[in-house]
Amino acid sequence: DTGVSQNPRHKITKRGQNVTFRCDPISEHNRLYWYRQTLGQGPEFLTYFQNEAQLEKSRLLSDRFSAERPKGSFSTLEIQRTEQGDSAMYLCASSLYRTSGYNEQFFGPGTRLTVL
Amino acid sequence: QKEVEQNSGPLSVPEGAIASLNCTYSDRGSQSFFWYRQYSGKSPELIMSIYSNGDKEDGRFTAQLNKASQYVSLLIRDSQPSDSATYLCAVTLRGSSASKIIFGSGTRLSIRP
Image (cartoon, rainbow over all chains, first blue to last red; front, side):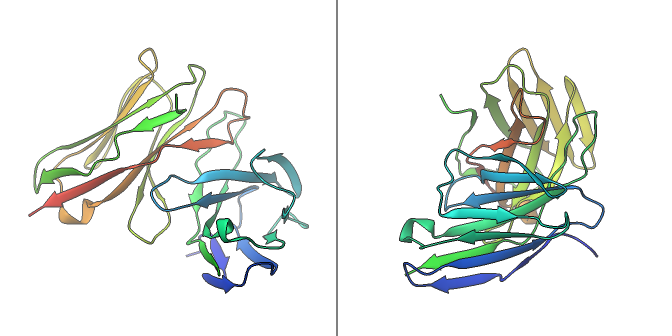
């Protein structure tokens, strides 16, 4: 099964450290999304790519967050100078863009970040 | 007003009964609507998508959309204990290139044997 994969699955870090997460989308999907989810809330949109182009970034995303998708395949999400408020589940999803606008997104297992 | 609203629950339904989950959204121009199921500690799993007014059935699941009322629902027939999970309603916003999905906070569903 070639679903969305994410690594690592869990990350514990100390405040102030940098962390990087990786997402590998479903192979034929050209769109890739990052979300953040905290307990009791739905996933919150962070950013998305179509191929290698980053097309939208949430206003809620501070400058400490950066995402890349250099070859239009896997993507990385980096958080610099982590804060305790960054503790959350980071979810990646992918979709196959259709001009019809239909856009079913499929999620990976997530990376759970704990900032001490 | 939240963009996507759901009753947080928990909604308790006896095994074998119909579970009815509801969602309202604020953007009248929304075009795409999704239901995701999320087990505790796991990621969301897409179970239904609906784009046109009316009903869409897939196995035990039926999604219902009423754009005039800005309302989307999910019915689960013959509820099973394995259906116990949080159900997330998700909606794309007008002008978002059909990519930015806004999620509700989810409804916790509990199926009691």
